[in-house]
Image 1: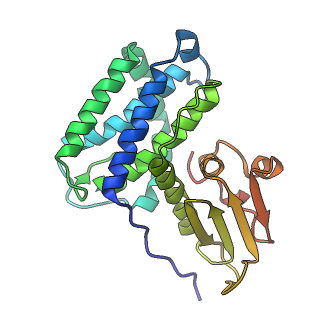
Image 2: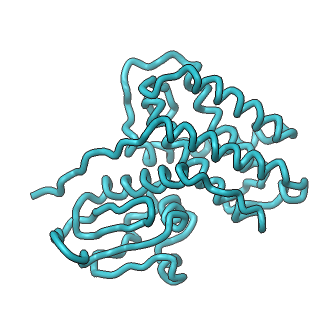
Image 3: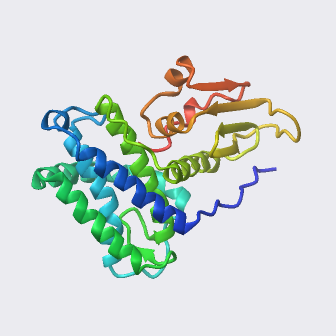
Length: 265
């Protein structure tokens, strides 16, 4: 029998909105403390400085209000679990747009302030089921905001990696949503019940074809923490390195997820 595909996870739109606003605020406060020398530091994103990365974070959030300004499309084109695959084709445009935005906005705090104000105004009047004409494909506002938690958490981690001691905090709701979306994406791409992937305290999914377990400890188990999982899913760290550094515990013959990762770049 083919693997059974599980029902899609439901996210609370009120909590997701709050998570996006909170994490954007965390980033804004941290960026405001950066010196010119720190803003000029390189990041793990090829060719991007910290200034570029900070500008990109405003771009990732500004797409919410910008998409709400567009006419509503007639129907949804993209499910939440399809979104990670849909981002790959836009990498070049995003890179060019990010550099242009950073160059045009030397006052980053003013850019963050304008972006936050527009976001608050747009969300105040928009229902969760409002369709957005996103460039990756039309989807509901509720789903699109879940994708923003991924953007914010991933790039918060990039900022923290680039600037020693910055330590931008992660909103718990944003980290949870990002972790769950990427875990569910793995389960959707590799359906099955042979391997259990545990990312405490936010997610447990079963994936990979093979014998299913019905009770007791599964024969194939992968366990890691949320940030390591997000780095694996987005290509910030390789499976081999994460296992070698004991950031991932993997047991069982079907517990090697290296061929399935990353899920998005």
